[in-house]
Image 1 (spheres, rainbow, N blue to C red):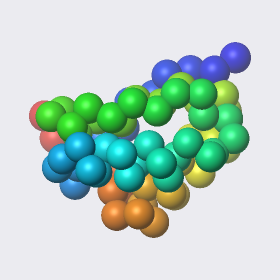
Image 2 (cartoon, rainbow, N blue to C red):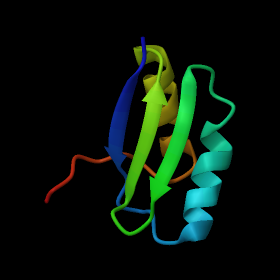
Image 3 (tube, one colour):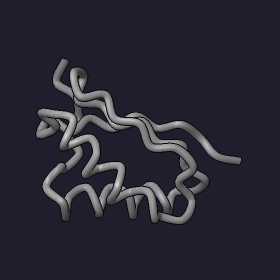
Image 4 (cartoon, rainbow, N blue to C red):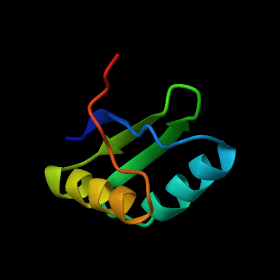
Length: 72
């Protein structure tokens, strides 16, 4: 059974960023939902397993949106 995970990516600044993130993460097996909140800089993922989450984080790093711990 999957879970929903929220990731904080402070480098998200516009809708173009959101589209790039969705396009890069969509092909990952084990992700069933990718939503990006530009204002909050939060990526919400529905993941089936830890492997899919790790792959998503690696892809985000590769495309220039590394995940950080929120400092709020």
